[in-house]
Every structure is written in structure tokens, then in C-alpha cells.
Image 1 (tube, helix red, strand yellow):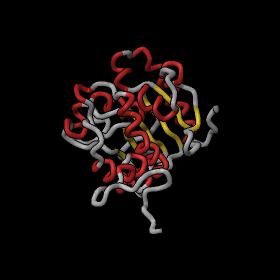
Image 2: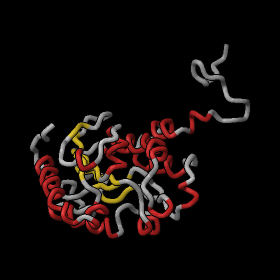
Image 3: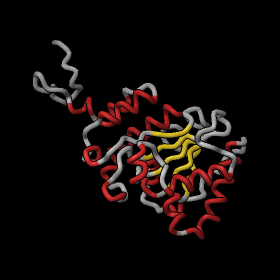
Length: 226
């Protein structure tokens, strides 16, 4: 009997139609073997209404060779216009935060640079928080992004990305400052406050400073307190 390609327990798609499973986020992500290929797979994915309402695709910014990967939640209005993550007010604060530990997203030296992305590549309408369904939809792409990037450490900012990556409903106020292992890769991951939150609650910058110092120590060779 000829192979159908449909997989066990799943009927072959009708002739002339593609298998929906082959265009799922998990399949598209798994098929990307470079960051460029992953970006194209994400850009071409049409399973979310967010794409239709956004101006630009926001994949990543900074140095792909950097040892630190920073992950936020989603583009805002300025990011949507620029097609890059973290370029608005929150992005400018993030640059100051990174600068405080001698990192610069645009530095050529991987030891001094940072690589920045988001859970979602498209702006949610009105800058709203990503829904649980949206986070679940784009999580396979983010997991593959981390695997391909293979950083020394991950700084995960805010509830949506942290909760999606760690499969938890625990809030960021309880999780921040505590190193964990990213499940799929084992890479050390530190949850912390999102810069947009710090713009509203500047008193918590002191806690974020502790997190940044902890990131700096891990990048300098210290073992994270797991």
C-alpha cells in the first residue's frame, strides 16, 4: 500500500488539499533550521487575526550572537510602525536597563550585546495583553526561537511570556528574581518585570536592579541559583 503521509490515526487530506497539521505552528517551527527561516515561517503563518490588523512584522532586534536573550510579550504601537521589538518608551527603558550592566543590543561583541524578541510578532489591537489562545498559538515559534538562538541566559519580561514558557499561572511578582531552567533547552531563565510595568510602577525598579545584577553575574560565569 502506498504511503499517504497523513500519519497513523489521521486520514489523508482530500486530493488537492494540504494537510492542516503541516501548516500548524508546531510543524512550521520544527521545519525552520535557521533564525531567518523561522522568521519567514512566522511571517507566513496565517492562523491568527493579529496579522491582518498589524502594520509590520516584529521578529527580533539586536545581535543574534549575543549571550543574553531578552523576551517580552508583544509589539506596541511604535514597534508596529518600526517593525522591531522594544523601540518605544518601554524599549528605551530596556536599553537603559541593559546599559546598566554594560550591554547594548547593537554591540558587535557578543559579550557586550543582547538579542531581543517577543512572544508575539504582531501587535495586538490597542496594545492589549496577549490572550491565552494567542500565547499558546505562538509558543511553538518562541520555543524554536530559543533553541536556534541557544543563548547563555534568558531574561523573560512580564507575565505573558513567562507564564507561556513556564506553563504556569503564577504571577510575575512571585516569579521574578528566581532562576529556573527553560524546559525544552535547560537554559537558565530569569523572570523579571516588563519595562512597561516599571514605567507605571517606578518604585519596583529597585527589584529589577537586583535581577539585572543577577543576570550580569551569570553572564560573567556564576552559576544561577536554581
